[in-house]
Amino acid sequence: MRTLNIGILAHVDAGKTSLTERLLFDHGAVDRLGSVDAGDTRTDDGGIERRRGITIRSAVAAFTVGDTRVNLIDTPGHSDFVAEVERALEVLDGAVLLLSAVEGVQARTRVLMRALRRLRLPTIVFVNKIDRAGARTDGLLGDVRRLLTPHVAPLTEVADAGTPRARVTRRPPDGRTAEALAEVDTEVLAALVDGPEPTGEDVARALAARTADGSFHPLYHGSALGGQGVAELVEGLLGLIPAATPGTSGGTSGGTEPRGTVFAVRPGPAGERTAYLRLYGGEVHPRRRLTFLRRESDGRTTEVSGRVTRLDVVGGDATLTAGNIAALTVPGGLRVGDRLGGPTDRAPQFAPPTLQTLVRARHPEQAAPLRSALLALADQDPLLHARPAASGATALLLYGEVQMEVLAATLAEDFGIEAEFTPGRVRFLERPAGTGEAAEEMPWLDRTRYFATIGLRVEPGPRGSGGAFGYETELGALPRAFHQAVEETVHDTLRTGLTGAAVTDYRVTLIRSGFSSPLSTAADFRGLTPLVLRRALARAGTVLHEPYQAFEAEVPADTLAAVTALLASLGADFTGTTGGDPAWIVTGELPARRVREAELRLPGLTRGEAVWSSRPCEDRPLKPGNSGPGTGVGGHSGE
Image (tube, rainbow, N blue to C red; front, side, top):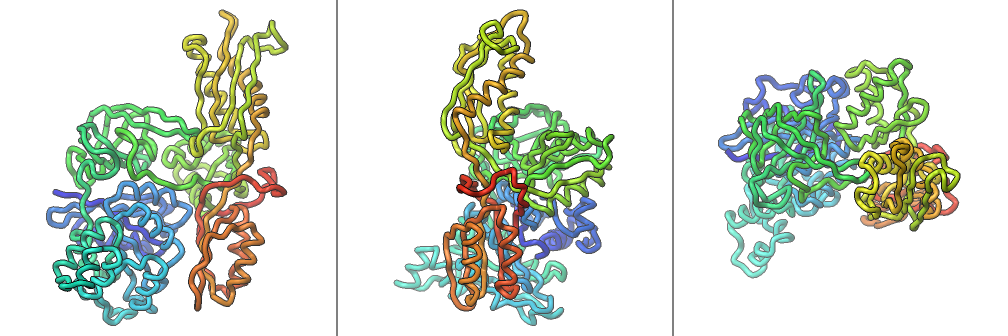
């Protein structure tokens, strides 16, 4: 049996979960049709998801059609949960991008399509809600070609759109399909120009090939609630999206050792963590010992090993084989992003969260349980970045205010902890500007009171490397415990740099060491390391960086001048202006601390007609005259 791993993606409220429910029901995977409004869907099984009617975590469900098992991955639609979506993209064979026939192409839809096209992931567009009042078809197709991609062709037609009588009929590939394909397929173009004209079989073959390589997108219409057009969509999934074979995605081919990625983690009833693993090669069976590679928040790579104590393959098989997904448990627990057998070809590419907040327990006796709960949640989402802060608080990094609200509700419902969050602030970072060295000797040689000798060099590391620690001293010159004390203290100390922001992309090298037996202890090295490191960092100097957001604003033509003037005054760097009458699309990058102001002022300048989206991108050095991390300016992220 072949397997397809299909992601359902859309702007929030476009109908992702309803479509998942319809597919499961129509193919006998569930015996009743769940409803988002009623809170009884298969994939949104968390209490918060059911009450809010939104998807927060990626969920997996499966159905079978003939000899094909389809694993559906239902992903969040809200921009605050962008990391969940990006991690799901990594494990997919193809995607269904939903649009609402009423709301049309929305801001988040465009962000998702850019990611799908960047990954060249086979993608089918599904226009949902054709039976809703106000549904559009032909006009919406024009919007899709203008705002999402010109490389699209409808394979269904709709009669009585916008009414409960709406129905869908198949539209076989024809001359219009061939003309659209000619823009991405040279053979079709040659046949149209030089003849003979391509036959229906030629067009169908080209359509399958170009869909498979992600350069072209078939479009279907339907209604997840009413069921219209869903059978045609399934036919397109099976016929146009190829199943991955071992070695063709996710990593290098060859070898029998298992290779895969953990893309989701859910807590179990007994407190254990259940990890969802997509396997690219090899096999995994119960009790097999596995070794995962984990990238820590400071850039280091560590190993996590253990035997599989529980293995539930989606679809019911006893052994997890290449191309499939399973829920498994390994002692010690796995985290999202853990790699089995090495890195993958399609790794997530997203900026870390930029909104920083402090969390405190409302009741002092819950301070310790709060920290434990946050660390457990951070294991489910490593981009949460939970760490201890002053006065018993815990510092968190998030993507936006909605994520903060969901986290507060999760703490209350799942852990029984009432937590208070400080207003979100934009997170600044420091990077070393140059190289600096410092050293301290034993106490009988100078003024220090620690029985230790430490010399450190601080220098810039590669962009995105986090933090690295190395040695130039002779191996064995220090006991292992002393080496470990220095390394751990270096990373802990650099959580706060010269301006108060965390230091990143650094390399620290131990260039001098010594101890006195039996007087020296690990505590001496933990105490002396920060003194030496601070001095070396001061000599190297640091550059303060602030986060930026890449934005896209669609505005009426007569408001373009006012909008660009506003964005320029907020410090935007423009990357493009396209369009004309009736609307222009302005793109660029803006300091994250100014995004919220742009969002609040745009409606007044555009009569409420502006469509705005933004997402984290690379940070930049803080411009002279701007305030740093001590200003406490509010931050905002997302659409």
